[in-house]
Length: 230
Image 1: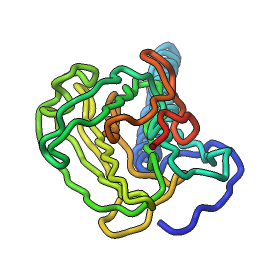
Image 2: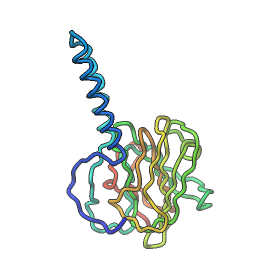
Image 3: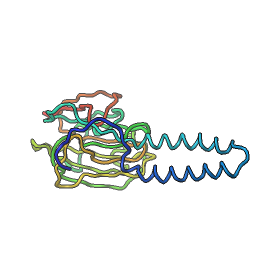
Image 4: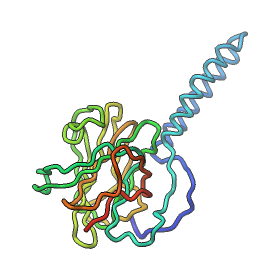
């Protein structure tokens, strides 16, 4: 974790995709060479290059990891979007696992085309990290929040407010990576984790929190203010 550091905005490949892209690229290059030298006609080579080159480009796009910095120095009471995507839920719910009271839940659905790195939504200290196995329903369905495989990260803000951020696996996603560690300080601009392929992130906020987004709105992780705490 550590203190926030201002960084230039640029794109890099997320560390979760380094091995996948490296070994995948080597395999594709070897197969392409075999097709080039083993066939008199070059049609198999070009067909393979176009099809699998496109798949490789899509995969590389999925693992892109922009370095971002929240534009406002003042982050007190600010809740930023933990992920790129689209707002699919804004509702009051009964949260009976941790809080045992009403909470405001804001959910962001990430499609295959979104950046899948996740950011901490608030500054604070990590109070709890818990991973739970489950099903793989489509991530935008309401039951996905409780029944799908998910990882919970609870953060206590400097004002003593507990915020729950839940990473949820979708119908295609099969791996949730969480970097948050219990007891560590965390900050907006830092990565909370990564979810592979289509997925969703829920944020549970205190009842009465001011909502700053609307249903269907697109979000940019670590940039879009989704709510303001009292």
